[in-house]
Length: 136
Image 1 (cartoon, rainbow, N blue to C red):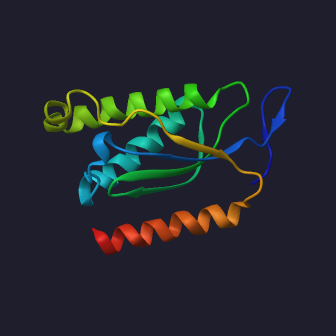
Image 2 (image 1 turned 30 degrees about the vertical axis):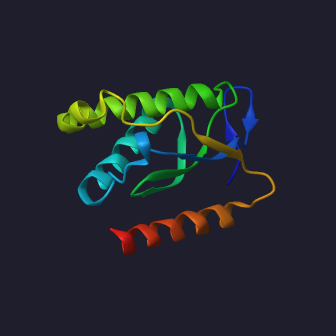
C-alpha cells in the first residue's frame, strides 16, 4: 500500500483487526453478514478509516485498515464497534432485544502490519471468506 498523506504528514499505519459478536454467536450468516459488511464500510468512510480489505465470517470480522496517525487504535475500534452496533440495531431491532444493546463483544485483536506483508493478509482474509461461504 502506498503512503497516505495528511497536510504535513506521510504515513503507512496499517492494521489487521479481528473482533467478534457478543458471546461469539454465529449471527453473521447470509443477509445480515452482507449488511454488517456494508455498515462497517460506511462507518469506516464516515470516520476517516481507509478500509483496504475486509471479511465477515459467521462469528468474527477481519479488517485490514489504514488509519491516520492522529487516531489511536482504541478510538478507531470504539467508533467502529459503537456506530456499527447502532446501525445494525436500527436495521434489525430484534437484535437489540436479544442482545441487550450489545452486539459486539468487548475487546478486539489488532496487529500492526510489519513482519507480514500485505499480500499475506489479503490472502488470509480471502481464505476466511471462502471458509464462511462453505459454512454458510
